[in-house]
Amino acid sequence: MAMSAKPLSVAVIGAGMAGRSHAAGYRNANTVFGAGLPPIRLAAIADANVALGDDAARRYGYEKAVPSWEAVVEDSTIDAVSIVVGNALHRPITEALVAAGKHVLCEKPLAGSLEDARAMAELERGAEVVTAVGYTFRRSPAISAIRDHVQRNELGDLTLFSGRYWCDYATDPNGPLGWRFKGGPGSGALGDVGSHVIDAAEYVAGPIVSVSGATLSTQIPKRPVPLGAIVGHNAAPVSDEMGEVENEDTATFTARFESGLVGTFSVTRTGFGLPNGLSFDILGVGGRAAFDQHRPAEYLFDDAQPEARTRGARQIIAGPQLPYFAGGVPMEAPGVGASNADNFTYQARAFLDQIAGVAEPLPACATFAEGLRTLEIIQAVVASSRNNGAVTAVPSVT
Image (cartoon, rainbow, N blue to C red; front, side, top):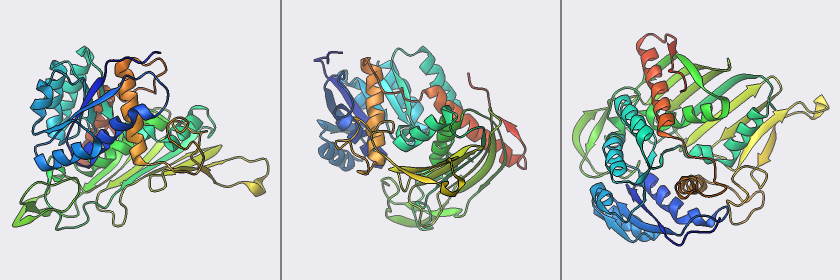
């Protein structure tokens, strides 16, 4: 496919750590995989924190920083936008962008409430633009390889999925009471990091049909009110005033998949010494596989070898034999590593492929409908926790 001469203009709303990841992804999108994308114009970074926006625009080569998301909506030259701000703002910003004819990639979780997520999924059904939600772990070469093993039945009949996302960003009781600690049950660790492991589980092992045994708990019930803006999970000046944490620090539950597979899940933001610990094991009668985000350039795989004395888990190092790796890194050789930043680049490329109609696109990004589904599972977990762990059905995949 011949590359169009007309640039595809992009912007990012939100200049925090995830916003910068989107900004870097767009900057690198034309350096990976095949031809077909038009030139990418890095148009704007929007953030109410003007200094933060200016810094992000400078670092990642964007033309300008603007102080509001409305400025992006009003800029008729911008084609595609990533929304990377507080969850409660996702719906109004998305509605305004879609009305302005702009393509939207919204960070997970899709929205701050189930009602907002349903409205966004309904908006998607009638939209004439590309809409997507950012589940970057779908772009992991290792996770995608494990999915391929499952789809090829190389693990045999599946018996157990055990997924975890353990983080430590909320272990300090003096950490400021930012927006992540606001909202009802399910909007804490479950919505923030649990949404990723839930999506990864369904991506690898298929639909979840029910949850049970859910427990939500809060280890640090009060936090100091901040005196100013908070960037990401960073520390910030705080006042002497304490405010209530409104959601969970930790959640556990079990799940039943459509295939009959049983799953166990645990998520926390108060897990000491675990900066970004998404991991899972998937077991079958004929093999097993495991992934740990703290070692993202590899995964473990075990199956029935010809001789029992040589059986055991093998460390599979990321290389051109895995999805996304060939064409996705400058040095296409095993052992050169892979990172979270690469996943954002692959996600940006996939989103832009969808917009540009590239002849051989990367697998499409998750839809708003899939983002809604994750929130429906989260709400089922909350309902189970309120009902002494009772089995709670999840709406069917439509």
